[in-house]
Image (tube, rainbow, N blue to C red; front, side, top):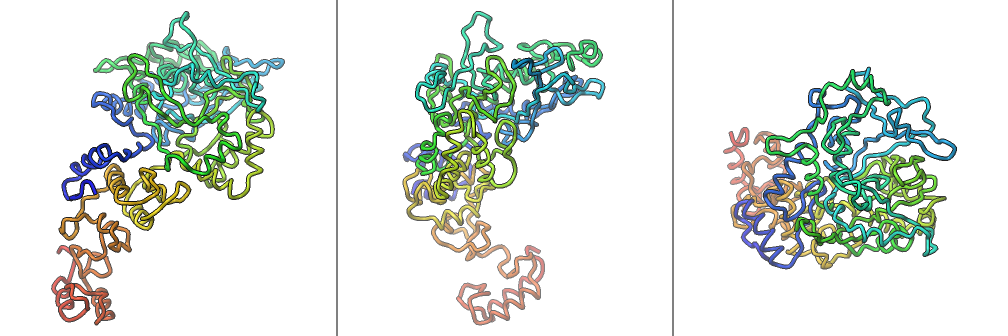
Length: 557
């Protein structure tokens, strides 16, 4: 086993595990957790990521330009699971159906309702003229730099506006002009937003900063008047435009949050590949729109941590006719029936699901089943929904298990977000062979089909990353506690300390921090057995009684 000693400091162990055991030994690195930065970023990039993360979660106030009408005061309020990811917050779109044509009622503040305001007098309402309203849930901002780096031509290669394959799928690109581009610049393939109405991270940040928080900036420099009332805007807007300005280091808020979103890592998929459920996913037509894998471009100036990377996103970024799932809202060239295929990475954490939040609460299997069924009976997803309904119970379970792998952290068997002693007990029980469909595959880091010493090293690295110190050695024998447990030492209470290890108060048989009459009663009731053996001779006898009486009182007292 590499890094055999495992007795040095946590820092040294982590360095050893992430260089010698993995990079040097040929085994893969841990996948970043959702919300982590891209693997391999420089110190400067990490500093930008952290500063952007702070800006992303820091609220604006009226004195710094918030509002006057807005939906939230900071980005994290909506993108909260994790920071930069999905969220349970919804916004409302409104407009009017004018003889079959959608009008956004821009003159009345549409199509986005700013539901909050710095004062009641500045608040927007849905105007009575509106005949169309639609709910849109918060989208994910995960790994926006990687998504942005997918070449336009790659996205366009999948469009089939005439349904030439006769499979019922006729997706098309939403070509848009980024805010930062000149009017004569070529259009870009949209990829962000429920209508694929945004092509770049900078446009996404600038647009949301003004429309969701009311902060004017270099790219969107005019304020939105509540319900189009310019007199009300003049009375309510207390800060001169633009309200986003450079900080002491020369970066604006929009630039800060853009860098944060660009440097977010793609969420994990565990196991990484090979589940039977993904075969089912393809067989029923889900992958016709939810395309699994893409490769980012390698254009000049693109950061090395983003360029030429393989990413598993499960989206084609195209617009599709969604039948009864359509929202009735037009956005640019995206019509009332069309929505962009959402990404599925980190799906297991998403609640609610679908653009309108229809699939919410309960078990993951229930949410995702409802979301799939809602793709029918009309529209381009109808075939996949019908095929899903026709699956056997076994196939349906396999498909759901695969979808549940999208966003799962390696070694986190109990799904609580922390790799710790409880997960170690499961990993230990899994020692031996494993398949991608077996729950033990969560601990098969290199997907070799075996849970072995190499996977244990990966577990240690995951625990260290989650703030759990895997270097503890309770008996000072040179082998860390986790290694002893992995080798078979009992840990019934799952505290990460072998039960055979003498603690700081071995006579505290009840574990209540006191050596008292309760412990004495236990010892007397187990007299002559190994159960209360304190001196290591294999039986509970007079010597053990002397040790107990000699430490009577509070442990450590």
